[in-house]
Amino acid sequence: MTLKQGKSNQTYRVSSIHTSLDLERRLEALGLTEGSLITILNNDKKGALTARFRGTRFALGRNIAENILVSEVDSHE
Image (cartoon, rainbow, N blue to C red; front, side, top):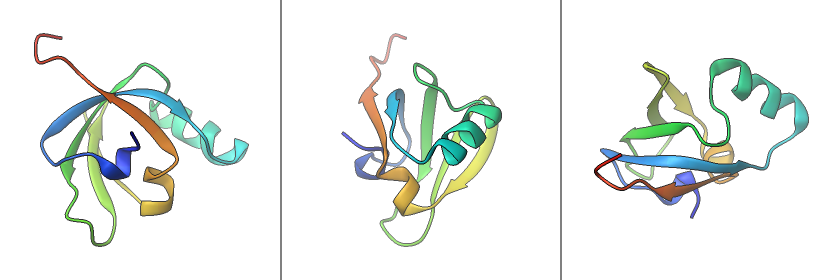
């Protein structure tokens, strides 16, 4: 599933990122890499998606969020 399809207050593991190389490098510099955990704080389907990863809050545009593939994380992880 894509990050854009995720639910608010849910944590996911990043499976892959399919964006331009420049944007992918920028996200990596911010700490969003394959295998990292990301928690959606607000995904009300309007405007930017707000998420937390590596302890920091970020707003991600919808076009970026639909190019980040994630999987659900077991609540015990």
